[in-house]
Image (tube, rainbow, N blue to C red):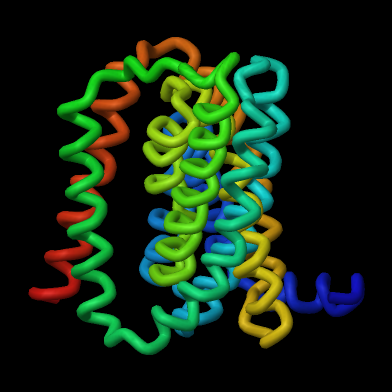
Length: 270
């Protein structure tokens, strides 16, 4: 968007809408920084029902660009903590990007009502698994070539599956990526949250590019969303280091169940 068009478009937007976009960005950034997830899950309904975007496609496109950008910012904040597993994060992200492309096409062929119910069921299932499992993953691959190969293949496979789900449901996939990294890469939740920003960024940017090409995106709202995201991400990242792994696991699971419950109620009864 050219600068003159940007300011002209900015003048035509209600200032309250821009303030709401910043608040939405703060909420999304805080969730990404604290839990490594909740980006698109929170951003899309916020843009639709609070900010007031009428076209769901524009909401998804705007969300994808905003969440991906906020994830990159969160990744930078996490670099100082030295908890990011770059190798595993990239291995996870690359097949996941391909999976996201395939999944998005499959999602378009699924009726929206069924899609959201499947989505909510998946969230509840993952939440139950996380509530029952302690954060006691240990890396056992060093010094054994066969185990190293198995370890890598597990990361590639789970990355592909998370990418498929991300594209299928039209989300960044953080709520899938964090537990998947804990399982496949054998890393604790604090490291998984930090590392998850690599695939979340990749999946989100992949989706955003397709929506930008189709013209289904609101750049101005995305910019203000990102501004809020910087504030929220910084706060969430700082708080994440102050809580134990078990507390984060429980908090993460509660967020999943809460959002899943809302989706079910909204889909079936509203």
